[in-house]
Length: 436
Image (spheres, rainbow, N blue to C red):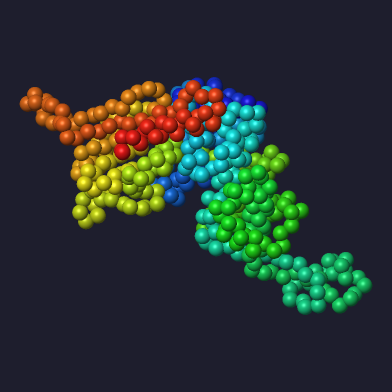
């Protein structure tokens, strides 16, 4: 099976997607919000967290006889069809996407996003590496507890007598009665599913290292499932397929349940289940780039986070005009504003300028930056703010207010991920020199 590989923010003929028609029939012209409801994992989780990402963004949007890919990277699958969406700033293998995941999501370096013979392995690795995030979110609500029916055979009858089982187990009669009882328990089908997933991940070469970051959550699951048995895995998976978590309070566990089923079914290459025809993981490119830039410039800038409602700022007194500049320098005497843009230097224009200029005026900043990925050899471009008016024919550049397009060079001619990693670390050091 050869997956179709495309770049984000690209126009391609619809006929080029003939080999992945089962996928395009489901995802084309659907918004991120719709796809997330259909069961595709979207990062960041736009519906619940990411206020700055439009719910109307699409993975593929129709334009006459063409599809336009959106600002998204990731993997999609349906049956034996695979669609891989890579970063437009990578030449050849998409080492940039892999590197961003490693820095932002703290994924191990074993993520295999290269063009090997099995892209299912790449997808299942991504699913496994998402597990700590979803388990951590779910466990904030405590261990999942629900009613289950347990079977007993003893002299202390406390439920419904099971005549057929009693005859089968207790003949000749030795003083025991077979019965079942409905109990409110932590050791239930969902917690057992999570436990099976934990044990599955532990068996991976990187499993223990991955689970180390969530050791408290793992302990809670293990303590809640004393009846765990490896031989029950098939039954537990089927029980969870039939009993999807529907309670609104436990929506985090619903996401975790779906993720665990996909991970455990990998062994049989049965990635989809139920009515879900398409499965996959999508990452918003702008979000990944912004979080990566924050990793780089954290020592120099504050990073307000609109996705979490953290460090909100206001344009006007009385809490009017809510704004979230990407980056505000920590030097209050010479304030600097910066904006992360996942787009080429030539595409940063018009509305982008107006937004940053508003932030500069609000924080009395004389200097601002655009941080963007540079795939060529373009030099930094300084834009000096004009003063005067064309009506009086006295337009000249000011000497005190400057906006700079400052790119981080993305290595292109590399033969391996290790070479890419070494080169981009050198480029990161050069990128930061302007702030020292």
